Image: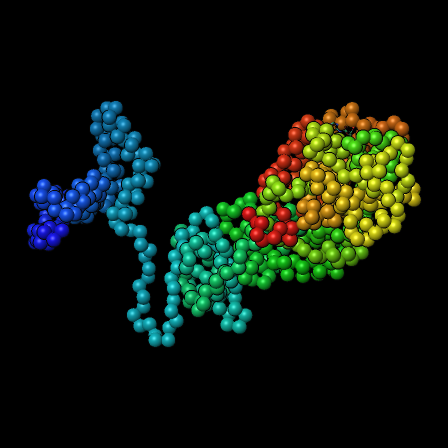
Length: 612
Ligand SMILES: Nc1ncnc2c1ncn2[C@@H]1O[C@H](COP(=O)(O)OP(=O)(O)OP(=O)(O)O)[C@@H](O)[C@H]1O
């Protein structure tokens, strides 16, 4: 290397002479260096081979060629041939019109008149004329020292709303930006913040104007809108973490006179999963539906505001459903269905949980319970005011975890038991019902733990008091019910427990322990039901089961509607039971998804380290 050094150090003299700006380019220099090195190569001077190979490598040569090309391009300083290509094109079209027709001329005319080509020329001219900077009005010459720093913001209004709301400061009367909607035009510009003071809109001073008048100016504006604002001293920073909630109520902004901006409101239904993106305002949050995350956020009442509204509604008009805020059903747990056993029960393990008389009692209880819930609502069951939103997280069951409980809910006669039976029969080793408890004595043909768990009244009552009964009731002096432990037994065996439950029981079952997945079985419309239930039988108190009458089907439809209205927020999945085979296939697929795919569940069911 020592010998090489003086030679290489000597190169810069002629190297500088060949610098890219003045000479043949770097690749040319490289060639010369290689020639020089070649002399040393034959003498095997230490390190020369390495350097030679490096400089000779194809990738370095290619890189230098690219560098040369870029350098050459930079020097050319390209300028547009014309800044009025559009005008030129029009002139050419005019000339072509007078030229004798030929297929080539026809084609050229067509190309020049094509809207895409015209748009291309228009874009070319805009760039060539450097016409893309916003034209700002000149600053006045004599700006006083005390003048507040202003910001001029230009937003191009297209089909979307501006995504900001304004308000009047109560003391100063200033028009302020009240909030900037997430994902909206204003937010994406990064130039408008909540708290900015509006001075002018499109050159019109807003001093002394009402917010409505400013909104009118904005509504009338087309294209670019120019705001002159005094920026807020410390723009708000949204440091809250993203929260997801399940709506336990429905909300219609159009029917809520208190919303600050109706157009910015986000309507939602019970059970919708909402992404809360901003909770800075104590009264109005910003949220998106997870089904629509690409859109800009909308305003929803905060938890605090909803509870306040619910309380006002509760005390002011207990019997009237509020127009924009329909309260959730009260949480009167354990309005139980009386259950009882009968001679007609099947004796195999598959029959557990399918007791005919238990189902008959349930059947009678359906309407009564929904009515009881109404009474409870009117009577001031304050627990209904508990949670308008329920925080949820994505939960994916690990293969080693216990299965989730599958709960089927539906109006009597819709086919809940038929579907449950068919599912279990598909694979009895995988799907199973829970064995109910009873205080009645065991019959000779029965076996403890098969048809029922036979327990004393004291044991049964202690299960009820310790909230271990999902539902229970009394029939002919005996208690009947399904316990959490009976469900756990099935789950502990690695099976999927499938049970039907009165809707009132859902909230009792909704625990971290069982993580129930609730499927609502819904009747199809009347005409379809009449057709599909032609030969179906509904179970009755009599020896012979009866065919469905029109009024039975109507009652089923009414009950289904009531259930959806009151408990829809708890339904993870809905299956319309029209064609039995289809419904069964849908049930199987829903049950598999519940166990194998991520689902939204209450955050309290999952510790943060298992969130996905
Ligand atoms: N999709 C369907 N098409 C035709 N018949 C059906 C369909 N679904 C259920 N059925 C029939 O309707 C009748 C009632 O169904 P099922 O006994 O399952 O009702 P249920 O919802 O369990 O109500 P209950 O609890 O009152 O018994 C049964 O004869 C059943 O075979």
